[in-house]
Image (cartoon, rainbow, N blue to C red; front, side, top):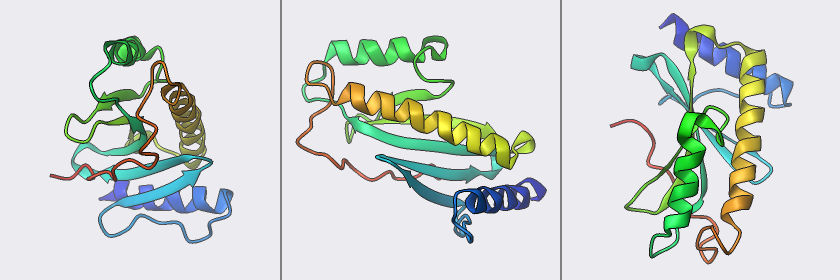
Length: 152
């Protein structure tokens, strides 16, 4: 429980840094912030002592593109194209997501700010890349589906 309370304090301090005086997780341990074109979902996972960051990058084309999936797999290989995050595709919705886990015990406001900045930079890069006609997503559906969350 102590790490969860610390996570609330860290998020509040981060919020003050970016001009959001009363930033907090909701009752379910969830918070969402928009940075430019990237919605960063933040969700506490108490049993794993982690803060999960995730963002919708776009939609996989239908039918599936082998080139797209190859580029996503290459990016995940030793995190070469993801900055330590993981890219995945939900087969039911075709949503391509970037996901990153931060360990709560070592989280600080300065680290959270740096990790979110890096996460947003990687997400923006992938969103631009996926928006290209040759290797990207179906641009007819700009918003894409909302996330279901991590809880089961």
